[in-house]
Image (cartoon, rainbow, N blue to C red; front, side, top):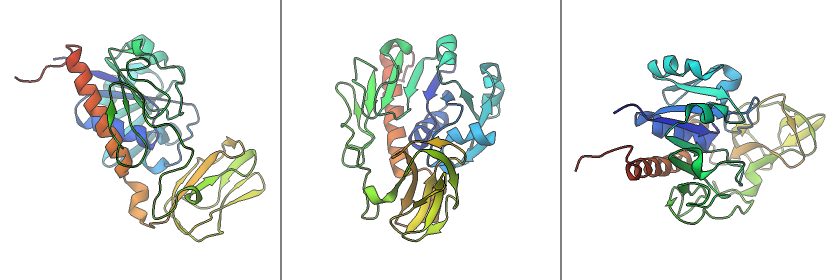
Length: 272
């Protein structure tokens, strides 16, 4: 059977969980991204290839390419191509069997049920059977990674999941509009009240102690209240550089939905 192509829209940390699950399962995966991705957990986001040229996560390399003609060579090396393609032109031209919306915008920014034979979306903002074939739950808790074939994921509460006894306080937000500039780096241990970045001349301070698990890319323009970082109070440095339990769970849900959808469409057969 010919290789099945999968386009993943968005290479943040949750999208990366899906990308790695699908890549490990043998699908031909490519990722579409913005010219300047907004991923926070950059050490475990394939979106970082846009800035770095290539990034290796859990032994798998994602590599920036300039156009789809480079996909076969990258796949032949066992790597994952990342393409700057905010409008999804490669999806329309290459017509993959599967599209995964991992943008995590908390709303549908343009994905349609007709984009591919199987369309899977992550998190709130989508209705299974209307916008896509299936929706995967991204909220921490009992239903994390659950696949909905009808209905929607839990609505966005605006409150991050609890880690180490903290939820809202572990997220760093821009205090004003301006140019973001990092002072500390992902993996650094920080103390409560410490300056970890600046927006313009205004400091961004952490409210809690822990490890700086995520930080926006240097030099991006931000708006007031925008998420720019993440402090993990559990203070395990290794967690900053490995895919999270949440991302693996979401990725597992995506893999289930893709396999089921392909079988229903007659594009993949399992032994009886």
